[in-house]
Image (tube, rainbow, N blue to C red; front, side, top):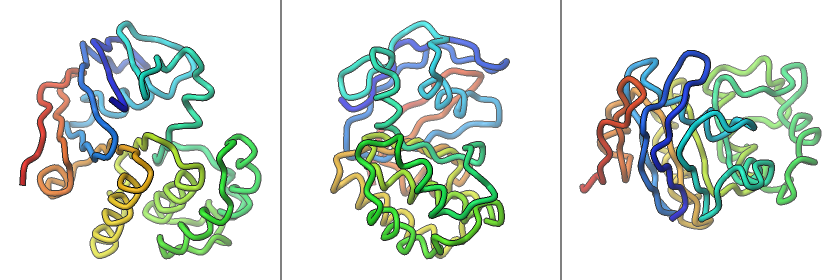
Length: 214
């Protein structure tokens, strides 16, 4: 099992998780839906936070994430509007500055992924649209080949035409790298037709988790 959350309960900045339990094998896309404040982003931040502020257990590839949390972070690709990059620098300059933190960094993979996203590596990050910022972050994550991608409303600012190509990229990632992807989304089409598994969160609880059979 790639990711397992067992009875995860805790509060972070006023948002709570309550007994969240699910498992996800490698090679699948899971979409989380729910109203704002339901706990979707809180779950991501709970996994990423360097401090353990919850009860229960979270395992990544069979290891509890806080046994070596720094190594855990190097195996997770996080794409979010809240992600912090150097806004005054280009995408490539950001990659050059931050690549030292990832032992599996592949500079050519970053450049190739930027091309797949249709985005110049020389564009200043602070001048990117929301959709472009999501594409850049995805290309950045792909360069160090994480096992788990956490995409927080990543497709919300994307052109509907490119969104189809984006899903093709996601499918190639999980097929080639034995990774899995968890997305939060308000787009009904993604929940129904693009996800292998879908979950609904409400008031910090995972009230529904199911496999989507097409």
